[in-house]
Picture 1 (cartoon, helix red, strand yellow):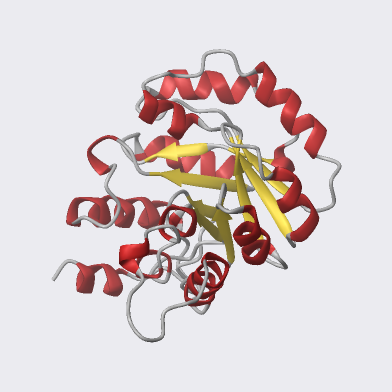
Picture 2 (picture 1 turned 90 degrees about the horizontal axis):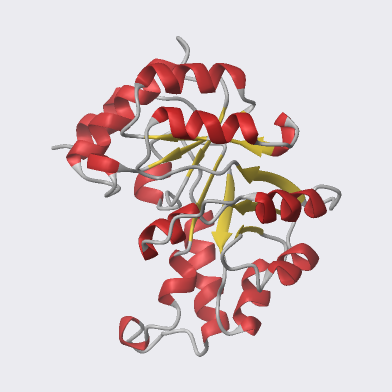
Length: 243
């Protein structure tokens, strides 16, 4: 499994320490550390920034700048994939329209299935695209709740074969939490957890606390990356999580 660490991470020295030889997830809304990722990472993927825009209440209408941004990145040897534009709480018609408008090749691209959307749409996307992102939305926006686990269970049951292997490569958006990704057969997942937490001094106390933000980032990454995704899908971990 690929562990994508979301940017930005401040200070830049902490970002450099974190990204050396690792994998980054760069948002179109926050591209300021793209150069660091492109130089230091094994690989990087890019996100369309729809979640950030949605949280701010300013939905993106014109995606032409994002299309051009991705076009410029495709030739970089470390570039993995780009998330196709989506409407977080939109309907399936709106999201399918954005997929149809997407100008780039399939092997560079990953659409998003939002968990409030139909299982039928999930099934269709999974059987057409070589990579599929799963995004938490609607009644399932909060990752890790009992309701969320029931829905993700339903989704994986629909697109995994008799051996518990998904029919396409799955990416968990905002799911780089070992309590989540270790229970599912993800090819990759991302999170901005490190960037959001290394600067909270009150969370780092005790005799053996890391001496700097650079070491905090390194410690958090090492803890996350010591875990892998599940080899196959099984209902058992979900049942245990709901107890």
